[in-house]
Amino acid sequence: MSVLDKVADYFTGEASRNRNTSIIAGLLFFAGWWVLIDAMSIDLKHQITTGHVFIGIFGTISFCMVNAVKGEHISEENSSESGARIAKIWLLVGFLMGFASIIAAIWVMIDDFINNEKKEGWFGVALLMQNVFILFASLIYKFGRNEEEWNE
Image 1 (cartoon, helix red, strand yellow):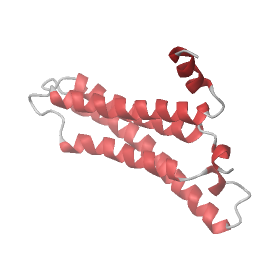
Image 2: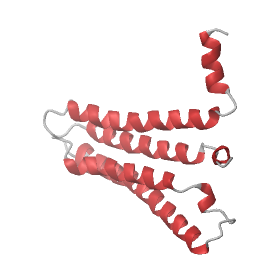
Image 3: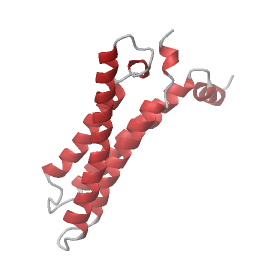
Image 4: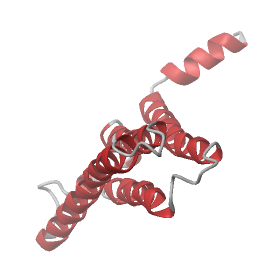
């Protein structure tokens, strides 16, 4: 078996769905932060402030909150009614934080960067791209994996 066949088998095997989903989500999460770090590295006028970075941190916290809840925690088969309710509220707050970070990034992009002629608009786009990548990574990691393989 050649190396190319082993690589193809690695990505198409039985348990490859969780692995591939995790790789894609990790790359999207990395790309999101990479875009903002790259924008900050070429920002000589310090147009991106700490407040702008906190929007991405907010999205990262959302990523952790959403993916901390297993599917069995929110299912109807959960024996603890209050535990299922708390897990659903936790998941809702996590999704709200993720979408709020997108809304905040759009707001900052339009208000601070596009409507301000003294600042370059690309930095606002970088901030928005960061948060979109983080939210997509969160959604892919949450809904792309198969949790049944872990319950065996």
